[in-house]
Image 1 (cartoon, helix red, strand yellow):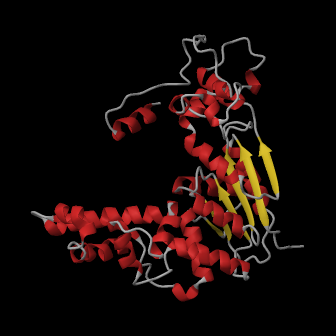
Image 2: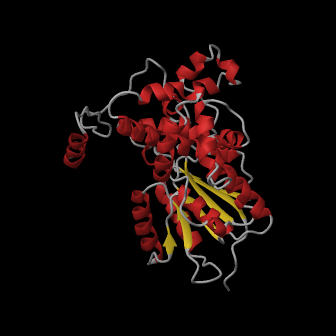
Length: 358
């Protein structure tokens, strides 16, 4: 009997992408209420989409009627469903904003706030400079809409008197409350009043999302079945580890609220995992109905081996166990161990050649 998936957020974590693909296939094997409804699997790249299509087909025999939108496209579709009257040209698309900003730069150049902008536009190739500046401003505004929605809403309400705020208010006069930050708030209100949502959404292998999107996911999960698949390098909590630079910047580790044990966590993960760590802290605040973990130790098959383990495996094992070796300790590396190589290439083409030769 086909049933509608229950609303709520389920978090799937693993250090193996194949294990997450297995869990996704198990979910997709349970059909939606209608065969005409598409499955929605949010991905971060076209490469991940192609890989998932192959993995789903391998496990289920076919991959059909599955949509693979990027995160921004998913929320754009949700806005369009909730507010069909706003359908039409997106005046806050970066390309459209570029051409809307360009004429405003000359019109506003006489204002005191635009002194620096006017100085920049003086001289030769004024039109080209105006276009290039408008394009950069459009991209910055696009980033603000996703990562600084509160600031944008404050500008809408009249806050801020610098040239960016003044320029933004000129833009939004043509389409008030139709940009992403305002639509997000309107979507939350609409969801609470019964706006349509998909039956099920799976978010797979996305390494990070803006806090704005994460908060919307939390709201949507109250009425929609959402599965979030996240790659984690370790089954242990690592949301509070810090790099040596961050510890030094704070002068004393205890200023971060860290214990002596926590300050000895894996330094490689602490130095290079900030984006993943911030995302982990964001999703940790979401209300989940269930959580499924499937972790496999990288060194599990080699623990009884008398030969030296590959150096890459040693590094992966230390990250998995969230530990660092003694600072001055040396590890034996076999002469034929090529598991970790460092190549200094002068161009992307040369990088591809090295990868191909390998």
